[in-house]
Length: 310
Length: 310
Image (cartoon, rainbow over all chains, first blue to last red):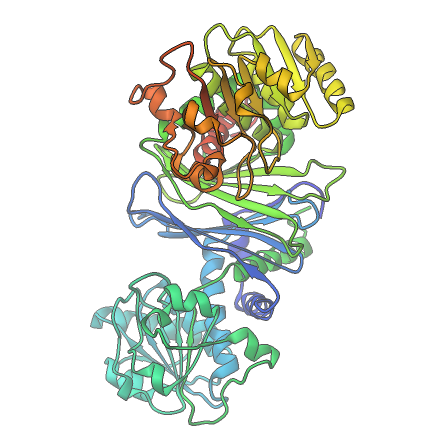
């Protein structure tokens, strides 16, 4: 690394990212949650108040920086979400690198949920049900199906045509059989259930969940958002990325008494994860800066190996 | 401007910046405070807790973005302060530009204080006293001496040798006669008084200030910082950049009852400034994101004119 800042463009980072890189970066980020720092999240907007940008900053080891996420709902030619990760030089505080990471951000978010599945789901989990049929949902299916012997995917969507089209996409991308299902059928059959929606109320009935199921919920990342029935909090073992943040803006804002365990603590062995095949486990992901910093560092490392920078 | 983000390096922005550019950018920023938005300031650190970075974000007109300021106290070869300004594309939310601006940031901060002098000081102000002998203090003297017919500079410092050396530097840079002075002499003689220190207690006695003096205080930008005697709040007309921020982390944190007027409101004519040659006016600067966004835009504009980018 020279003294000049390194810049990775969107097309460069999109070409470098893959599920392996994202999963390794996620593992590093969750392991760092115990010692690292994350700072308050800022939610801002442009002169058009319906746009949104978020600033998530943190530090761990030799990483320090900020992820600027943006959501421009009027975008048509470009994705509505984008992401820029800025790393500072830990030795001097000067700019070290800027990584455009709109495409990579979807891998990063899916990797966190896949890491939770790898850590908490039953080893023999075979049926994956996904609620949601958007761009992120496809990333979630692909990432999760790599960490368990998934042999069937069920797709729950609000619109039957979208669910059918998404199931066909899943098969095209993963080779797995995939079928649309109603919510009750999908939830009841699931060994692993992933929710990837922008819902503001529960997507299913807690009574439909079989003991032993693992649930990764990625949608709730702001006030008022909710994907899971609150009854599940009493019957399941609860995990998340950052407990304080999850209670403030994640799924557990709807469970004031919940004491979710940090996934990082399970990874280090400081806390227990699943202890029985009958446990229902819930992981709530609201997203934290260290995921972005480790992702950027991994992309920069791969770029340097490829000779694309320096 | 193409679709690819523009990057201005530290050496490029340092070569492009000057007092005129900074003053025009400051004026634009203060005029935008009424309609623009600023979002909560984040204060973070690297794994070394004595480092500090701040995130100041905002939007106004077609500008939206964040300034990452850093303070790495152990730096020796490099300045301890640095600054990176990130602009998003207002149409898409994608990265538009990254401007390294460590050197430019000192111009930007001095320009705000000079703008206050240009707006609030007596037109015939001739004696400028500066308290503080650091890098920023020299920028303040240079910027302020351009907006009033200053013909004498007095320098107040904690160490006599530093004050002497600084006075010599002032003369070398501005051509103005400059002399060290004790605090009482300097404050009493001042038509314009600039404080540019990291003080945590008042630097002078309010009784020393002659009626008609203008004071620009730039040092207080965090809890516990203070440069002015609290008695001045009762006898002077009070102005600042952002009233809420100034009461939270600026000079007026020590004046809970103070109702400072936004300088932007004086510039637009919405509020009165000085109304008599006998008024004592105080301007407190704690710094806000729109200053950084307009500075970055001005640097990018000048770079484009110079053919350095695109």
